[in-house]
Length: 154
Image (tube, rainbow, N blue to C red; front, side):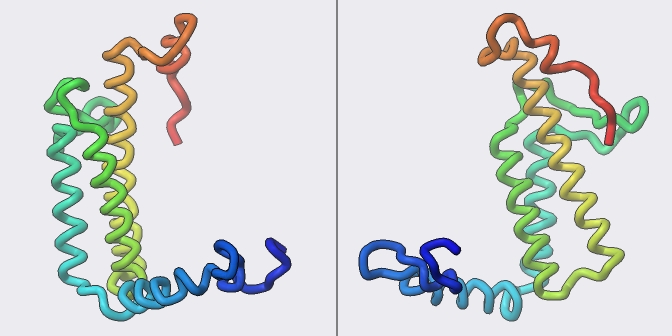
């Protein structure tokens, strides 16, 4: 095992200081919060708000295109992809807190995962569309065509 210890809290963080000396209390507090004390209604509101924010930042339309393709009301370079990505991460976090609190049923769980997946996909598509609109500035030797090659849909 790492540093010949069986417990992560016994890992040497620095000379004379163990991981547990620094992080054990913080881990206890966050675990207590996430599993026992997080306000379920508030976290549901946070999830909804960040999902809406992500959709707005990308200009994501509720309409679907041919074959169920996502539609956007903004051109790629007008979409705020990095802030949208932050919203995706926050939605994922709030989902995890709600799940830890036991506030999500089995049926709802799949719905929440689908909602996070939807905005994650839109964010990834928007990032790729931005890079393409910029001519893939970090690619060398004219490899842009490979970057947008059609792939199998999962």
